Amino acid sequence: MEKKIVIIGGGAGGMTLAAQLIKSMPENKIMLFDKGPYVSWAGCPTPYYIGGHLSFKSVVHYSPEYFREKGIDVYENHLVHKINFEEKSIEVLGDRVEGKVFYDELVLSIGGAPIIPNIKRYSPDIEGLFRLSHALDAERIKEYIDENSLKKAVVVGGGFIGIEMVEAFCDAGLEVELVELQDRLMPKLPKDISDEIYNKLIEKGIKISLGKSLEEIISHNKKIKSIKLNSGEEIQTDLLLMSIGIKPNIELLEESDFKFDANNRIYVNEYLETYIPHVYALGDLVYNRNKLTDEMVYAPYGDVADKQAIVLARVLRGEKNIKWNGVSGSFATSVFDLKIAGTGLTYENAIEHYKNVKTISLRAMPKIAGFGEKGVKIDVIYDQVDNIVLGAFGTGKEAVAQFIDLFSLVITEKITIDKFINYDFSYSPTNASVWNPLAILFRKIYR
Image (cartoon, rainbow, N blue to C red; front, side, top):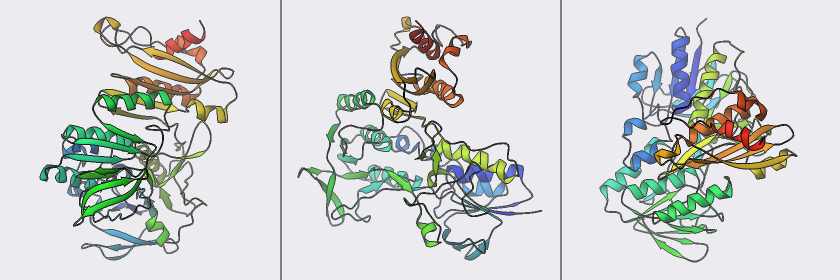
């Protein structure tokens, strides 16, 4: 029987889901609505597009017309402004569709929204004031840099996007200053990695203000001129990027009488189902179960949304043998030539949930040292009684994410450390050291 599956949101998760469904369920009607002009866009490459390293093709992969030719009814520049869950309909404003659209199954892939605190004289209309949460934002920032003679940029927020945008602005030829409220950069990471990031930015000539917050935005003729910090310091700038954080974009659901938990969070089960029958949610909109603690955590990453889309496509086909089990906190980023990756729990997180936590440091080599390779420094957190890895965080110049992925696998499967010596890893002087990081961990613990 033909079904009408409606997807709201054409970012990573929504478009991946639509593409999977049209391949496996071509008999159904797949409708996708997005309020912007782009679908199939990715947020993670945007800093490198702004910095001049990637083309816009790396940000927006395919046009809406490409997907229409595949059989998906894509409606870009169409705003879904209300959902009636009881009658299973959405209300749309657009040039091709306007009014009610009924659905059999509804998927919410409406993403996240930047956190904007209460700042004196803040206005989204100020020229030179930006945030970065969409392909459109990246396009506007790059155009503003290319079309104006800018000298300086200020980034407020020392998280993933903030750090990557510092590098992007530096690569674009701007003087850059970074402001972070906490006493260290990327405070959710182990302190030694935060220190490495700080030192790398200082090495590159970036001025950093820690423990300070943005208090006031000063503009002239609606154009950014400077910012004032809570310390009283005033910083002149031609461009200001607000990168304080991201939260689920729940505005549409608030208008539609969706029931949230006490913290306005949206939870789904292992089949990506919300509490409303025939309504699913994925991506930056939802919270996920942490596999190590069973706590609900926010994981606004493109790869998470893509994998959820693969699971949901199977669920909508009627398969229940594949489930979404949550996340273990894997990530990767870079600061100039410093690569950073991690997975699982930091030591501080681990001791809150486990009793026998230990840490150990090791250095793994992507190739033999004779090639001048300094290797990857990895801090491993483990339970010495249960003999399992709880977390791993690495820094280096090569193969960092790939090494951390190994730890993600053993964490997810709860493989005990005593088994690591029996894994048959590849070895070549130019490709891999004889000592894989899992084998090194075994050797250090069972010496």
